[in-house]
Length: 326
Ligand code: F6P
Image (cartoon, rainbow, N blue to C red; front, side):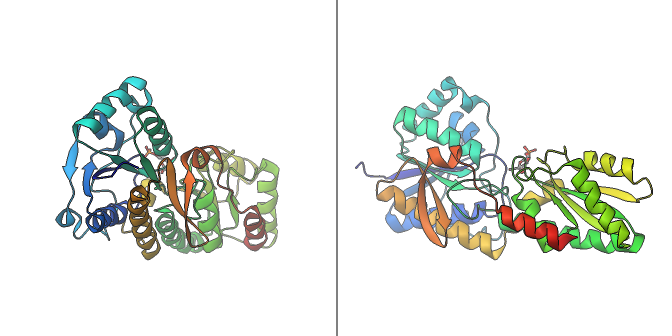
């Protein structure tokens, strides 16, 4: 087993609250194990273009509570090409980097898997996406904070919805997954939650609203995951407006506020633990895996599986939400 003397760390894809806490933990764990940690700026772009940043304890001082990522992040098309990855490998060799820790979602882990295998570089992934759609961990870093951000926003929307007897259709992030929508929808008592994992038919949606109208509900909240089959909040608005022209409807697309802000305590603790375990795992010869937490146990899942398998949403919880929302 080759000795690891230097680890490169990068954040890639959509940023998440808690990425800084993970970077801090990686640097501190590196100090503990006598391993140098170097930061790579702007994800895979920085790996290709040799954007290195030395990371010592001073560099990660005062960042555990900050949203975003001090290393910056990007989505990088160049890394999807063999040529891009070959250039990145030259940069890795030039900087004497022995292993990589990649913090990001599906795209990041896919790139990491390819790169690690092509050039025989040990790679460990950390689940960093607000969408929570990675197999191999109960929670991804940033998900809890994003849900809390949505809950705070929807509580405020509910106040004004009630005052004006309005129906609000709130769109939350989740390109392919409904985790944010389901959890925040239950927490805010949403009347209806639309997620890609549970097909909602136009008639079901309208039927639910009909019940609300019959029971004299004058205001309400529908939470829609952006990746839902209906096509998002604007489409839902059209469907409802068509059938119930008297409803006073407003649409609120929460957007990128969900990706910013100080990480919750849960995300800070999760990111700290996973960051430490990634470094420890590399010292023990682990590679080609993602470190996650399942039932409060640290689990290393092959990158192949984290990418290929879907993280199952709790469909039963969605059925319960349907009952509780009406
Ligand atoms: O990082 C995940 C995510 O926030 C998705 O929920 C969303 O669809 C996407 O990123 C938005 O990406 P961008 O910031 O590149 O528009």
